[in-house]
Length: 471
Image 1 (spheres, rainbow, N blue to C red):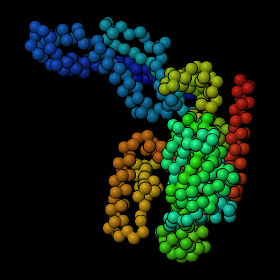
Image 2: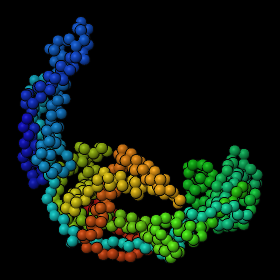
Image 3: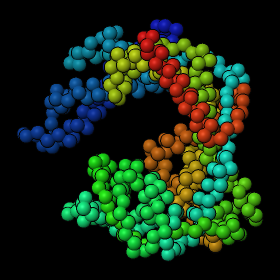
Image 4: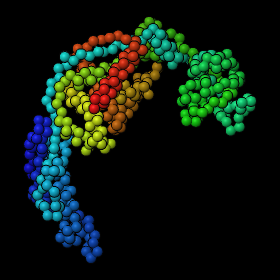
C-alpha cells in the first residue's frame, strides 16, 4: 500500500493511493472461506462447495468491497497521520483514476482532490464591536413584577367579570334572527377577557355575573386567527370565513389575585436569594428580566461580531474546488447554478467556521460532555423539576439524583445534544469576543434594541440585493 500527495495549487493537492494484490488478497481469501461455510448448493454437503466455485461466484464483489474499504480507510488515515488540514472533504478525481477492470486487474490506483485550509491571522484587538446593555423601562419592569405576583397568586371566583378574569362557559353560533344555528358552533369555551381586542365587546362582558348570556361577534373580538380558532374549537383554516354572531353563557368566573408583597411570596418567587424587602424583590426581578434581554443581546452581538470578522480577516479560499464540493456532496443536491449564484454567502459561512476554529484553538474554547450534562441538569431541567418550598434535605437529594440521571439519559438525544453543544460553544465564543475585541457598550430599552436589530437586518438585506444586482 502506498499513499502520496502532490500539490496542484496554493490551496489544493492530489492524493494518490496505490493498492497491490498482497494488500488485500489475504482478507479476500478469508471472506471467501467464510462464505463457503455458509453456502448450500444442491449436490454438495453444506460447507463443502468447491472453493473454485466459491471464487468464481463471489471473488469479484468481495474484492471490490475490500478494495473500497482499504481505499477509504487509508485515505483518511493518511490525512490524520500527516495532520493534513483539509477544507471540506476529499473528492474522487475520475479523470486521473484509471478505469477498473474488476475481472482482470490485480493492482489499483485511485486519485483524490483535496482542498487545504488557508493560513491566516486573527487579531481581535483590531476588531470593533458594539454590545447592547438592554434595560427594562419602569413600565416594563412593573408589568413583569405583576406577572410574577400573578404566577404565585391565589385563585378565586368573583361575583362579577373584570378585565383580567378567565371565563368558562358555553358558546353557540346564531342565525341572523338571533336563533341558534342548526349545525353551527355549539361548544364549551374558555375566554380570557383581557385578550378581547375590541373595547366595545369587552365592555359587554365586564360587570356580568355567572349565568349571564352575552351576544357578540367572535371574529371581531379575537383578531388573531389562532386565538379565534382556539375559542371556536376549529382550525385556523376553518375560521377564515367565520363572521357569525354568537351567544356566550358564563358558567364560571375565575380570577387570579396577585400575591401580596410578603416574606412567603419572596421565598416562593426567589427561593435562594434571601430576599427580605420589596426593594430587594424588585431588584431580583430586574436581574431576571435583564438576563432574558442579555440572551437576545448576546445573540445579536455574536452575529454582528462574526460579520465584522469575516469582512476584516483576509482568508483566501480555493473557490473552484469548493464550488465542486458543494455540488457533489450537498444533501439537497445543489445545482451548479445555485452554487455560483450564492457562493459569496456560502464562502462567508466557510470563513466564519475557519475563524471559529482558529479562536477555539487560540483561546482553549471547548465543550465537553460534562458541560452538556451540567446544562441539562442546572439550566434546563429545573424548569420542569423545581425545588419546591418546604422540601426536606432527603427530597432535595432525590430530586437532584433524578435530574442527574435524566441529564445523562438526554445525551442519547443526538440532535438535541448537538444543538446544546453548539449553543454552549457560542456562549464561550461570545464571552471570548467580549473579552478580546474593542467593545463599545450602549444602554438601550428593549424597544430601542429591537429597532437596532431591524435596522441591521434591513441593511444586510440591501447589501445582499446589491450583490445580486451586480451579478
